[in-house]
Length: 65
Image (tube, rainbow, N blue to C red):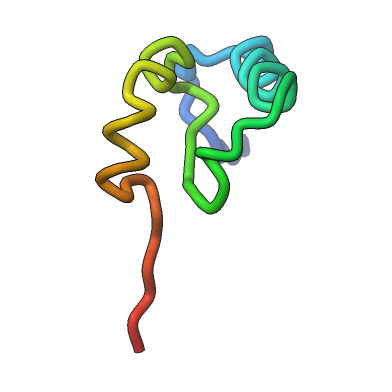
């Protein structure tokens, strides 16, 4: 019996996440500190949205208890 943990139609590759990590660590990206990002996002688009993300305080998670 085969137990399937992941869908077989995954199209992302290890190179995608590897490239994202290289971009993320190549220089200081202090504007991303404390923000959630995904390795599948286009880094050029993310950089283009930098002002909107920072000024709008986006990609942050806030828990109120």
